[in-house]
Length: 231
Length: 231
DNA sequence: TAGATTGTTAATCGATTAACAATC
DNA sequence: TAGATTGTTAATCGATTAACAATC
Picture 1 (cartoon, rainbow over the protein chains, first blue to last red):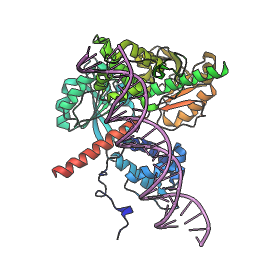
Picture 2 (picture 1 turned 60 degrees about the vertical axis):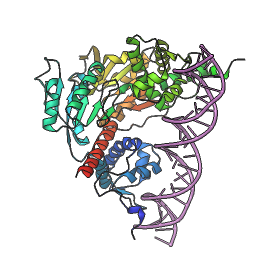
Picture 3 (picture 1 turned 45 degrees about the horizontal axis):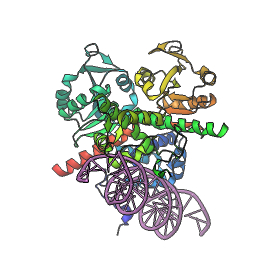
């Protein structure tokens, strides 16, 4: 009689049957970052109390989040640091690298191409695309810039699944349409506009203005409060 | 006897007394983007049904979100497009520009300096800082790069309130400490690391890996599901 | 007027926090 | 052993959705 506590709902290594909630997924990179720090500090085991403490989270939240992973802890000891790192990477699919196309060789596109850390996050940008003849044919951080017209065909041939949109807002929908036509399965959109995309293609928007909205409103509110208090 | 429906809890124009929830603030830029589209399309009035529809949201959510604003709609007609735009901008503090310092003149820092749209979001980057002597003294997109050691002093003298961290993770905490020393009130952190900051300074983390975590896990889960179904 | 839409209250949903038996 | 920590269930909290009277 196995305890129901250890029953896995899916074959080992497979994705969880239950969809992992977005808030949980968004906390995973934070855990990973803290765990890597602990590893360099020579720590082999870590409790949820300690890990959550470093990130300013409730320990119970970490315990609950880790139920989404293929790993269990030991009472009194906690979790093995490297084991937990591997379990999170596997959960996110960061243990093997996926090819991606980037569109828009402007300053944001160049910044993304220059960021080496994506490899650690399972992402390998294999080509960039633009419509500007002055940019086409050049190489940015070792990545070729190709004409946008080649995107769909190349995506099919190379079986690329991920597209990154780093164009101005006005061009984003057209680029998204080309990505869908090319059979891409996931789009990471940095353009500040909402896209119409068929449901079989995943979209995540990376909209800086959303974070800035929180920061600037909170700053303004705090200022108003101070003014009220101190005259 | 005024209807309690129109009672304002704070003097007109002041920030709402009740803290606006983060999810509400994060939706505001989306409303703004859609409203600007409607305005260019010549629309003068818009209903929550129509506005929310464009963004894939529930109309009731938009109605509720707008209760945080200094504006009321008209039954049967909706909200005035320009009035709603102004009300949202005022709520976020985007109707007047604030000066900001940026630290880290790498590719991300350059990309942020190159983005002209920040002015529309109430943000004006007035100086960049770095420790690299090869970068100090140069000008990026018209913004001077100064030695990091000058940050705290200049921040105090110029009464700059917002700092943007675009350095590698290893340097971020040190930069944050300098920003706190310089009296900055809000930090927008692009480095993939969590910062220790006193509670009187606001911090928002713009961590790309959080969005990427959602995208790549969902993609992986979908792949696994397809494999299961189609053999 | 009739009917679409508002602002608001109640119901639902989901995420976080608290509590605690099991356990190493 | 004693006690810290796990995994899990229940309680709380907050956000979204549904419902509806008021209204232009």
